[in-house]
Image (cartoon, rainbow, N blue to C red; front, side):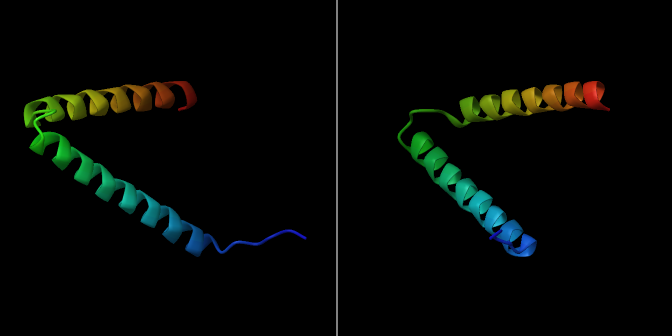
Length: 66
């Protein structure tokens, strides 16, 4: 028998998962900076690089699949 899921509950579960991932990432970043494993400047540079890559991939996707 097919299992039916509630799309609204699924969306909430996905959102909660992303929120928890974001909280975990923030905690890990704070630990890395506090322990001086990475500097805030390096973090900002990495985030900028990731943003540029995402923009590039989005532009390519839009160009290919319009």
